[in-house]
Length: 146
Image (tube, rainbow, N blue to C red; front, side):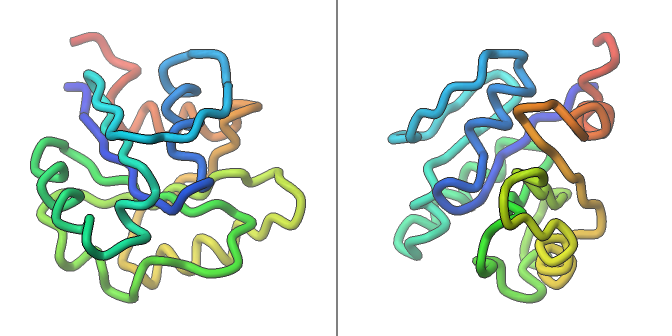
């Protein structure tokens, strides 16, 4: 069974870029202005996690997926995810470290922040080179026929 995933992360963390890479589309930066809702991915704007007034929307969308992906770029200076955040989820939550090959990247620190939030499974991804995407695709069951 192919799992549906919702990405959560701040603006610029790579949510839309990883969605493009997973769907095999050309990578083109575009600021997400609304919730991108497709067959297997829900991609909300980063403002939904950055501004607490939108948090209810993330909670509602999470009921429509099998997996929640906490995304954090490897070059982020801080984490938006509080320790133990995963404990509140009613779905599997995985961590995804993006931009692993970018300048100033520290994938290990980003992974530590995701572990503190409660993510037990963490994927390291570079959407441009497609590094690490195969493991994420396999985890989501997208490599199997329905």
